[in-house]
Length: 254
Ligand code: ADP
Image 1 (cartoon, rainbow, N blue to C red):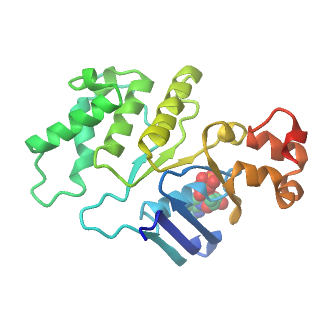
Image 2 (tube, rainbow, N blue to C red; image 1 turned 135 degrees about the vertical axis):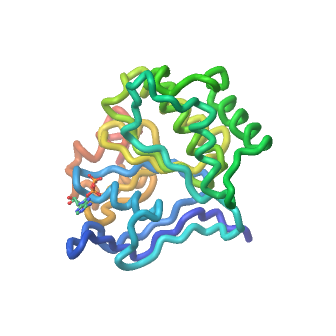
């Protein structure tokens, strides 16, 4: 039987020097998941992402991408602080998206005709093909974000890792962005991890929640979170139900 698991994290601990910042984290990401990663400041969200991107080694345990086929792009990453305000920033949209293709190429890393087609396909999919020849610095914040999303997706990664846009974008642009991500998840079955700094609204968008506080406090869907007496004990009744966004009346949850 073909496994649905995209990524498996097993007994993971991570450290900076002697300072252990994540301890014994275990979870699996399944194809089509849309997982919100939340937790207080300093809880290890960024450190976990660095581990998943291969930028920081595991102190213990392992991070395993399940698909072993050669040439597969395991993940695409959209960073948080992205805005370029410099109108003279010279790179054009198609060149920036092309950077997403270079990682898996052998040397010399030239962009070929089929790469150009790939770039145009992803720009079209994200409704920004008309921006192809524009300079990044000439685009709005929301448009820039779509360009970088295109860069993260152009190589058809199995998992999309997003750092949530916060103050850099206005609320309307943020909503549009979430709408687009929800569509990628629902219509195309894209598997998504979204790091969020907004604990209060994560339940509105994602299907599962990972709550970190130097260890894995919770991982699962909101219904389970909502009904968990352990989580009531951890967060208190009111906070627990502010996360879940699944009802307006607390009594619905019981
Ligand atoms: P979050 O993203 O949830 O705010 P981080 O993963 O950035 O949390 O940080 C987790 C802990 O690791 C914090 O205590 C932070 O001070 C520490 N930390 C983060 N980056 C470094 C670093 N480069 N060197 C040493 N300690 C770090």
